[in-house]
Image 1 (tube, rainbow, N blue to C red):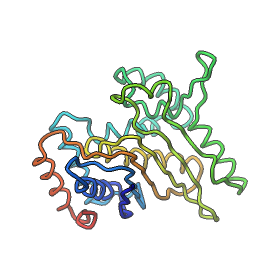
Image 2 (image 1 turned 45 degrees about the vertical axis):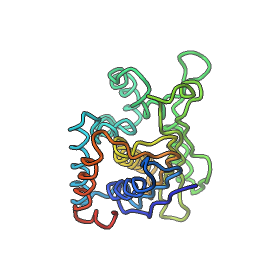
Image 3 (image 1 turned 120 degrees about the horizontal axis):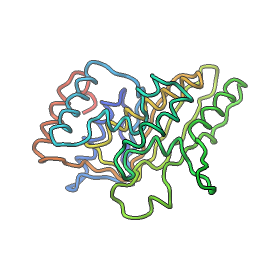
Image 4 (image 1 turned 45 degrees about the horizontal axis):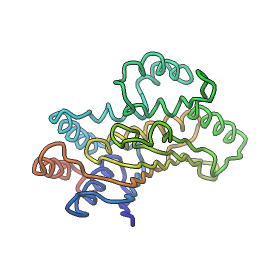
Length: 258
């Protein structure tokens, strides 16, 4: 059982297409194994900006996390811009992480850069390891298809009650063949709230791809998300949510995604 969403040109149009498809699936407004594909996760037209602003205002109106906050849980773009790699890893751990509310949600980037070892106080940085390997392999013109993997799910911390746990489970990076290499990313979610999280997740993953691609000196390719369970959650009434979707559909090129 799966629900494929037609490839969309941008994160905003992919959000609208995925929400529309899942919303129409059944009375529960959910679906299993939804596949969302974004041709260019960095694309940002005027219609995209307008759509993102509408979703963001809706989330703020109902006291939910803004789109930018959700995106920052995956990649803190402003921090990277100020400090660059590898310095921003330590700045994140020492300055940003202590300010995040206690609990597991919102710590995706922490999971990517801090994997604890058996000896207390020691850890590895899986994201930096991937970047280093890719950079070395691209320079040597010898890349691999199946070794740039990053696990977010932790069976010790995440196998208990389902609330407030990491919903992003796994990231698989790939490099295309040929002289003009592109970075591809597939992200697997065990559970996915499409109104509160999906748009920010798409944007954050696109920024993560941009970081890796820039560090490795390749171009950004497509982003694919597999939501093993997706839900069009409703922070307010279904009527107000439907009004939001109609507003987003009315924004320029978003009409095609609907």
